[in-house]
Length: 272
Ligand SMILES: N[C@@H](CCC(=O)N[C@@H](CSS)C(=O)NCC(=O)O)C(=O)O
Ligand SMILES: [Fe+2]
Image 1 (cartoon, helix red, strand yellow):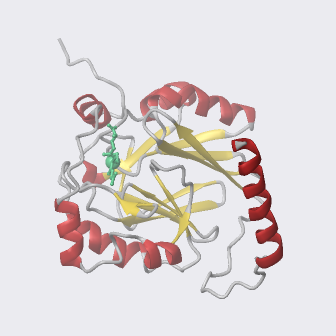
Image 2 (cartoon, rainbow, N blue to C red):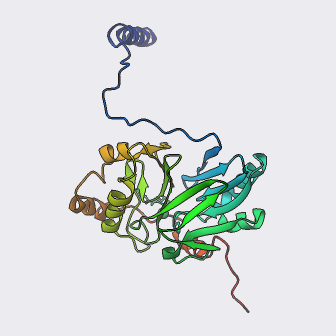
Image 3 (cartoon, rainbow, N blue to C red):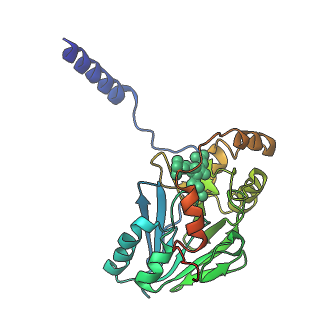
């Protein structure tokens, strides 16, 4: 009886959908035109399920040079093997900031591939190359511009590839959210200014790729976040109030991850 009732409801719904809800073909909103990747640009979004971290592999497919953004130590072998499978030489392993929730894979990747590690000067962490806003990171003919976007931590960077219309926001801007500001010299005011002045001023169609997502989302755009971000569409005062009341528990790994990430994810034995 129940099964029959359910199936008749389903049939009714289907009929209703078919009969009275034709697919709307004209988009009436303000969605900006999407930028396509150039033919010689490789993009892979990789995921670590334990920490919900995204790692990004980018490469110049003509010249075979690659970089990784925000690699996770437990996935370093996976990421290195992917580079080998695709015949790519890993030039740089880069962090958007000194992570608090997982150990970076940059130290292990250096050992595996001979790549150089990169982080911001302001992070206070060790790496082969310390970068700042005016610097650029090149791989093959491709290039990442560096935007200094403090707030989640004092050393947060956003990496921007203008030709591809993409930016890697780390934890500064998450999809419909943003990084917390309650540790590692976090500042809600700085984060608000970083997002409004550095990220929201990029072209509206710019695709934004965060370091984490906890809801299964993968990508957003400047236009979407300016319109829909529940925190960053508010005034500065309202934003600070929201951030002061998040009441999130500290990341489980924080006490292990931060000291490890200060030294590129490789614990150094102090001299005896
Ligand atoms: N539960 C996770 C940590 C979750 C968390 O705090 N995420 C950070 C980014 S990693 S530093 C964050 O900024 N979240 C903002 C938010 O609104 O969720 C763990 O235990 O590792
Ligand atoms: Fe973080």
